Length: 388
Ligand code: UDP
Image (cartoon, rainbow, N blue to C red; front, side):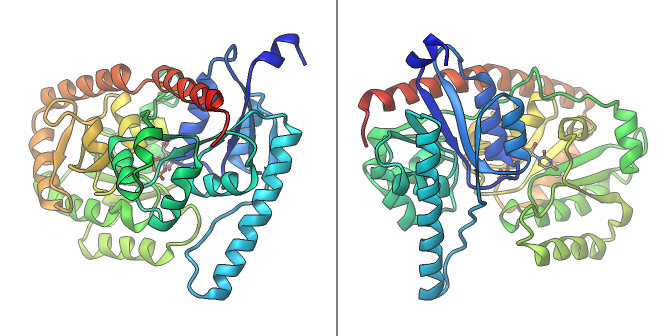
C-alpha cells in the first residue's frame, strides 16, 4: 500500500445484483469520477456485468451471491428471506474487513439493509433511488443510515414522509451523466439498418426495463395515435425484462402493439449494450412512467440532444423544464403525449432548439463531476460522524 493510501478513506460500494440498469450505471459513473486523491474504492457485488466493469476500472471486487428479495407471501417465505439477508450481511461484513474499508455506500435499499445488519462498525451512506420500496423497510433503514443520498427531491420527500429522521440526514444529489463517455459510437445509418428503420423515417423511442411501472403500454398507445397522424413514423421499444419477472407484461405489450396494428413499426429491440448509439437515432424519446424516481434514460437522451416528452411527475418533472428542454404531459395520458409529439415533430426547428436546450440542461445541472463532488462531501460528513 502506498504511503498516501493510509490517509485516503476506502469506500465499499455495495450492490445486490450483478446486472446493469440505471442504479448501476449511476454507480459506475460515480466511481469513474470520484476524486482518487480523496477516496479509494472497493466493491461487493455479484459476479456479472457490473463486477466486470468495476474490475476494469481497477476496483477490487468481493464476489457476493445475487440478493433479490421478493415480498414474502407467508411466514415461511419471510423466514427464508430473513435468513438469506442475514447470510448475505455476514458475508458483506467479512468483505468490508478484508478490503479494509472505512465507509459503506449501499447502492440500493436491499444493499442498505444488508449493510445496516452486517457492518455495524462502519458509517453507512445509503443511496436512495427508489419510490416503490416497502414503507416499513424504508422506515427501518432511515435511522440506521449515517447519511442518505436521495437521487431526486421526490425521493427525498418520500423518505421524509416515511420517517422524520430522514430530514436531517438526507442530501439531494442528482445522478450525473458522463457526457464525454455517453455518445453514439456507431454510425446512425448502420444502427438504423440493423433495426430495420428506413433512413429518413421519424423515430420515436422508449427506453427502460420492460416492467409494468415503466408504462410501455402507454407508449404503444401513444404510438398508435402518432402513426395515424405521421404515417412514416417508426417506434423503438428498447429494453428487456432483465430479471425474467414480467413475462406476462412483455407478452401483453406485444399483443397490444399487434392489436393496434403497429406491425413492423413497433420494434422490440431487447436490451442494447450500444444504448447511446440507439438513442442517437431517435427524434424523440417518450417516457410514460408516472412514478419514476429520477429517470436516467431521460437524462441520457437529453444529453445527446434528443428531446423527451415525459409524464409530469417525480424525477422527469425535476429534470425537464416544460416547453424549454422537453415537454411534460399529464401522467397516464397517452393522448396528450401523442398530441404533443405530433405537434413537435411538425416543427423540425423546434425539435432542434429543444434538443439543444436539453443538452445544455444536462451539462449544466446533471454533470458527473457535480454528482461526484457532492457525493464526496456526503461521504466525508458520514466519516466525520463516524457512527450511525
Ligand atoms: N439501458 C441500456 N440498454 C437498454 C435499456 C436500458 O443500457 O436496452 C440503460 C439505460 O441507458 C440506463 C439504464 O439502463 O442507463 C436504465 O436506467 P433508468 O434509471 O432509466 O431505469 P431503471 O434503473 O429503473 O431500470
